Length: 170
Image (cartoon, rainbow, N blue to C red):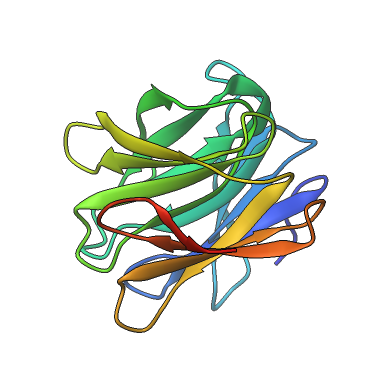
C-alpha cells in the first residue's frame, strides 16, 4: 500500500477491508483495499482546506473525520468515503478522535493551544480547554473518563476529564 506525499495519519475502515491514509503534502485522503493494496479512491481535500493530518472512524463505522491543518477545520466523510461537510476548529488542528460511545469528537489544535469537544451528530462545538505548545496526539484512558494529551514543545502530558473538559493534571 503506497500513500501520497508526506503520509500523516492512517485508519482502518469499520469492516476491516480498507485503510484510509491522510497525505499531508499531496492534500489528499486515499482509500486502499488492504488485501490487494489497490487504490480505491482519492479524495482531494483542497476545496475544503489543506494538509490533512489526523483521521478516525466513528465507533458505529458510519463516518470518518479528518483534520485539515491549514484549513482550521475537520472534514466529515460518510461510510462510503464521500465528502459530507467541514466543521470549523481552532488554529491548525491535528489529532482527532471519537469517544468510545461515538457521541463526541475531540480535536487537538496546535496553534490555538486548545482541545475542543464537538457533538458528533450536530457538529456543534460544546467545550474547549486551553492546552500547551504543540499538543498533537492524545489517547483515552481505558475507562474513557480521561484524555492523555501529549504536548511536544511544552514537554508535558496533560490529563483532561472527558466530561468537564478540564485539566486534572499536567
